[in-house]
Amino acid sequence: MRLECLGMRLGLRRLGPLCDRLADLNRKMEHSGAAAASRYSLDSEFHRILAGTHDNGSLQKELDRLRRVVRGHDGAWERGLADVRGSCAAHAAIVEAIRAEDAVSAERTLARHWEEGTEIVCEWLKRREGESK
Image 1 (cartoon, rainbow, N blue to C red):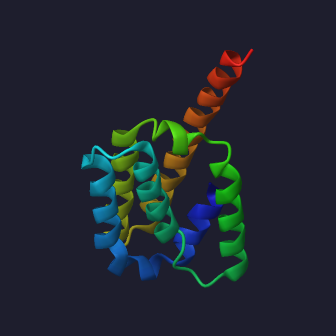
Image 2 (image 1 turned 135 degrees about the vertical axis):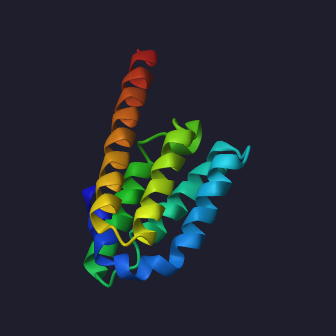
Image 3 (image 1 turned 180 degrees about the vertical axis):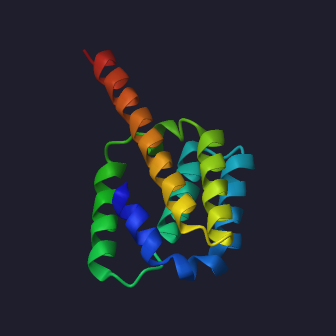
C-alpha cells in the first residue's frame, strides 16, 4: 500500500533505533511454527511499526482505517501468510535498507512487497469465489 510507503518515508529517521525490534518480529514470524493468527499478528505489528513513526495524524488514521478494511477481506487471518519466506525476506531487506539509511531501497522493497501480496490476495479471492459457486 503506497500510503504505508509514505508513512515509512516520513518516519524513516525514527526507524533506525527500531530496527532490532523489527528484525526480532521478523525472526519470530519466520522461525516459529506459529498458528496463522499468530503469524498474522507478528506481520501486522511489523507493518504498524514500519509505517507508524511519522507525525502525520491524518495519514495514521487512514492507515488504520485501511488495515481494518483489508483485514476483513484479505484472508490472511484465516489462511495464514501465503508466502512466509518471501514476506520475511522482504522484511529483512527493508530493515537492512533502513539500517543503511537507504530510503530509496527501503521504499522500493516495501512497494514491491505490497504489490506481490496484493497479487496473492487477488488470486486467493478468485479461488475462494470459484469454490463457493
